[in-house]
Each structure stands twice: as structure tokens, then as C-alpha cells.
Length: 331
Image 1 (cartoon, helix red, strand yellow):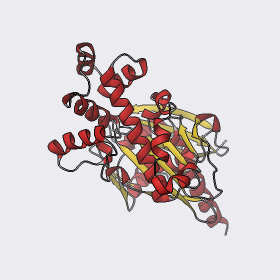
Image 2 (cartoon, helix red, strand yellow; image 1 turned 30 degrees about the horizontal axis):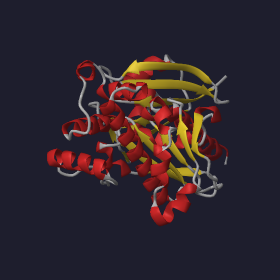
Image 3 (tube, helix red, strand yellow; image 1 turned 90 degrees about the horizontal axis):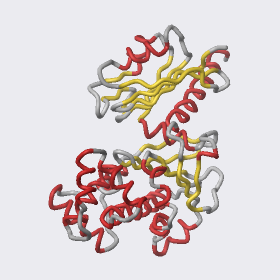
Image 4 (cartoon, helix red, strand yellow; image 1 turned 180 degrees about the horizontal axis):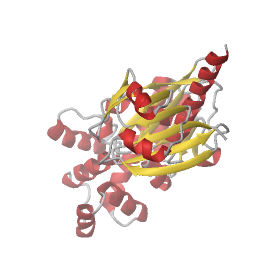
């Protein structure tokens, strides 16, 4: 059986690669440490002599004219250079969140959790927002034949507080950073920023046990775990503010894109904090849009559980490329 595509999710710490056949069945999947080797060497090792027709790779960094200087790795990736090095006729680089955005419309429905029903309009704009290390935002527009992704840097827009506690966070971060983007609050790093701002602002005391765990482990994960478990007022206040700010920004993005095709919440944080997202504060903040509340009330909102959604999106793009190559070859 012929191999249609190599698809990949290339991050700052790990690279996930998959070979897929003509029917979309995964033939082989492997995870590699991104550090210590060039991407072409990692891929060559994975392929082990197999030559796929196309390769589509989601990479952590902006892609301009087929070239990406990766954000957290000393790599300068170039589509044409990778084609020569790998012997693959067509290599396409996508920003990793662009790959995620393509993937949300093709993910298995069992991997979607609804936060708000609403009414999905066929061919309506679709908004994708995802908090992880940072905050990604992209939207999809129907062209008449398929959706295309419009990438954005919306996560770097200004943070807009909506109450006294968020004002406190803004003032604290502004004193240290100057300008405060929404990503400074709605992200894995943002959880820690909010925690420290609420602690220093006297909202709740920090327990010695939590402080020790924060020094020893992943601070965002520690705060989230204590908030879900209950019993630590500072961690609970932090995650409550994070979830509400996340919902507000998702609602803002839904309005900016008029996402009548739905809003999809991706990234690694939402599945871990799903009980908190389902308590209601996320949707309440999403809907709290004054005169436009009726508009966002009608928009369906879903959390994407599948951690491999970038590979799903990369495969969708690979199939489209292969189809065009085949059509050009037979026309």
C-alpha cells in the first residue's frame, strides 16, 4: 500500500511524526526529542527509506514564504531545502496553531465536549482559540470549496479587565511589564502570573505546602491540581479568574470573527481543567457581551480533547496537496 503523507507536530521539546497511507490510516507514529538533532535528521531516521508523496509539518513559529525560524529551537526551516534533503517532492510548513485550526473540523466527534449548544451555521466562520504555553487564535473562512485558515496573533492583543480582581492583576503586571497582553493572563504562564498577583495583592494567603510544590514542579499544573481538588483558596481564586478571563477572550474572538460556525477551545490546558470550564464561569463570561449577548448565545462552543489535532489538520492539508498534484499530473 502506498504512503500518502508524512505529517508532523514539531514543538520546542518534542516532535511527533506519523506516516499515513492513501486511506488515511496511520502506518507508523513516533515521538522524538526535538533538542540535539536537526529536523531533517529526525525525519530521515523516522522514514527509514520510505518516500511519502507529500510532507506537511506544523512547526512552532511563524511561517513566512515557506521559511520558519522556530521560536524555541535554533532551527531555520525551509520547505525547498527540506524537499532536497528528504527527497520528498512537496514539503509544506504550517504554523502549529494553523495546523490545529485545520484539524478541529476533522477531529473525531467523540473528542469534542460541548460547553454551549447554540446553532452551527453551515459554512459559517469558525473560531479556534487555545491556551497552552501561550495563547493561540485563528479562524477559518469558507471559500466555496473548503475552509481556509486565517492565522492571527490575537493572543498578543491587550488584556481588558472586567472587574476589580482583574484590575488588580492588570495593575500588578503592568507595574512589572508595562503593556499587558491577554496571553499574560490566559496561558499556562499566565496562570502563574495570576497566582502571584493575587497572592501579592492579599486576595488569599499562600500555603507553605503549595509554595514548596511550586518550586519543585510545573507551577501551572500544581495550581490547577489544587484548584480542582479544593481546599486552597489562592489556587481556586487563580483558576476561577483564569477560566473567566479565558471565556471572555473566547467570546471577544467569536464577536471579532462572527463565528457562526462555532468556537473550538483547544490546547493542553482546557482538557485538564474541564471540570472548571463546565461549572459555568467560562460560558457566562463568553456570553457577557452587552448588546451583542444574543449573538454569542447562539454560537456553539466545544472543547477539543484530542492532543493530536495538529496531526489531523496536517493530514487534511496533505490530502489537498496530493489531490492537486494528481490533478495537475493527469490534466
